[in-house]
Picture 1: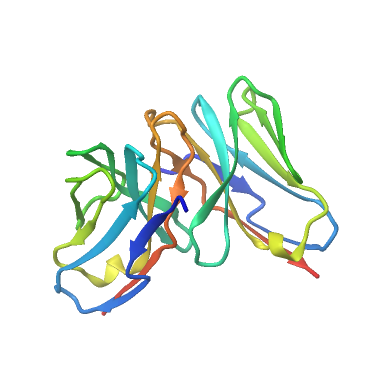
Picture 2 (picture 1 turned 90 degrees about the horizontal axis):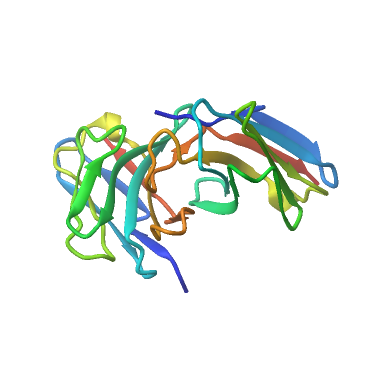
Length: 112
Length: 112
């Protein structure tokens, strides 16, 4: 089944403790992206990647890192999480020619 | 920054009625997409309409696009309880490439 897999689904952590949210897709998509969703603010793009080793900042990149060493994986790294990063996070992918996104199921992160 | 803005923000209807929601955008686009999100889950692509198209159908969905008014509408006919969700429009402008700007979403509740 074609899908984007995010892990974990839920995560509660403490301020300052580094964490990684994984994202993997099995559709050979070139484009991958991370969004955060907050009430009243909609979806805001954090980082995106057009292909392997090509990443760029979205609208709200502060406090986040990403890497794209393999085509299928696009992990989101929070080096020193803070409570304002408590949010619902989504990974998405698309083929460069297709334009529509396939989303993962989301990761609900709480930073205390 | 978010470009798509949906209107109305929340809609409550009886099962069997039609649901209409609108989306406006600010800059010229190549395509506009609509997505559905069930509570807290990942977004699911519904339909894409290109800038040279005026109307598109997919099952019970009808999307219109008026590029002169920079607006789109999504009509769900004969709504069902399972249509209860948030609906987002997304445009490829102002970014280009594969980046999408999402609106803040429309909450639709279909009462059985």
